Image (cartoon, rainbow, N blue to C red; front, side, top):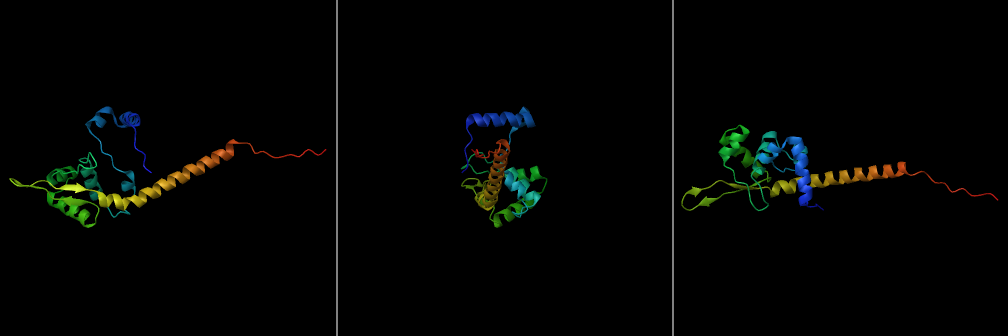
Length: 162
């Protein structure tokens, strides 16, 4: 079961990240992205551009219910591709069921930027995440067992022969 991070733990982690990356870089913004997606991108059928676009979309995903909605041109500029190319890549991610594209429109002005959701990606990567957690827990248990064996002297029962 996933454990929620408490405010003090979040502050500690932020300070640790500031030590690694610098306070200025952390203050400029950061994105939470599960590392298992990066580690298993090949198994998920993702190419580097698709991962880059997913990462970029996540920079606009601040709350669970607040879907990211950057303009295609903004994404294209960030990843160094044409808007048309980015649209094709996103369509591929949609067709693969990894993201959903939600069209938005406004009566007076017409279409707005699309919103994106990641339920398909989350569902697809979940087995890899569970596998990784199980492996980590098994390694921790193995290490604990080895440490327990090494740390205690072996006791033998010796009977007095009277």
